[in-house]
Image (tube, rainbow, N blue to C red; front, side, top):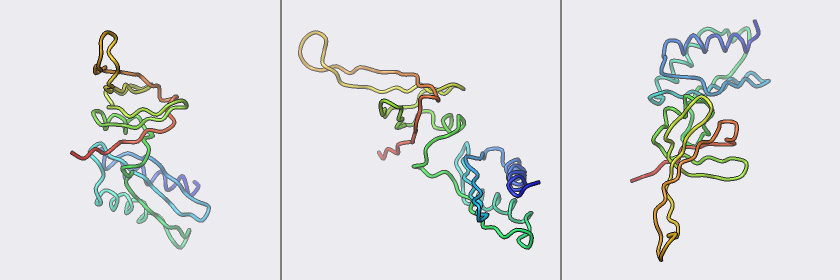
Length: 155
């Protein structure tokens, strides 16, 4: 078993103890720097990172392989990667970049293939003067999304 496989198995065992957490990214550099990025259905607290770190570190031998380990939560500005991340953010505002445009809108729905966004725009009336509010809704496939980030709105 390779070092990476061993780390991944230990990580999976640690995550099995905390089903609300999930792996966003695992990176092991050539110098054996292990970087684990987690997210959770209800967020990630410091203790979650400590527990996963221990699950990995206590089962590896530094005498056998010298390594460094960093376990962190996906930051607020980290782009969404997984369907599970999109699902936990239903109702929040996202900035979604495709090849041709950038849309800032509310995430309404998530399927296995894509997302549905909604937003309102003010447009000139078709008849008469002034503007009217138009409610827009658009489905975007995951294959079209280049980057999606949750926008934090302070009220």
